[in-house]
Length: 245
Image 1: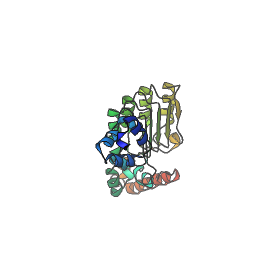
Image 2: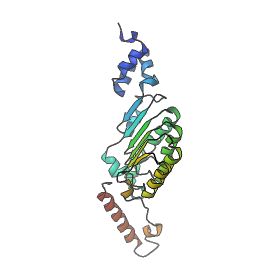
Image 3: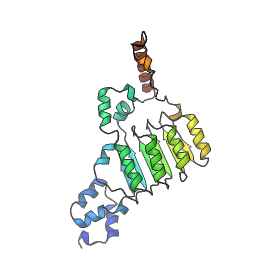
Image 4: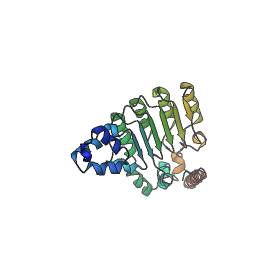
């Protein structure tokens, strides 16, 4: 019996043992296997180890997606993306500009096509914002587990979104997100007392803070340039202490 003579259920089962690239390669051999590749039932779990993989087109988003993880464990996250915008050099800003909207755009697509998502993990996604998280919470009403790790632009706004739209959430983790506060965690837990909420290091880290404009501009006050320089150096040293840069 030829492979393509198997019924759809058997082919879906066989495809389920392959990684994303292998599925796509096999789908290019004939129309029958392409149909299997495009079947949303095949794609109930997706894991990406870097944002660039979101561009590869070796997967299908659909209502069968239940578990999604985007985990970027790279030195670039610590040395470039996690730095406060006002501290970045033009070179660092140029690097970020090539991918800073990538995860946000992908999550917007998830909101439109994956209403049955049950768990979402975002790690090292330094450019996602509270609005991205809130949009997922609004669109994916069945979401049970949310984990945000080392996402530096995430603030208490995401916790407010959890309180307002996370009716189905059972577990939320916000680890190493430096702009999460203890007050925000407390208010979220009060609003959702049955929620399993944890935040490793988040509320104890040094939050982003941009220096006063007058302190940065040496022309406004005598020695202002020196003060701004000291402030920048102090911030960088603090980031190194916490392992952020």
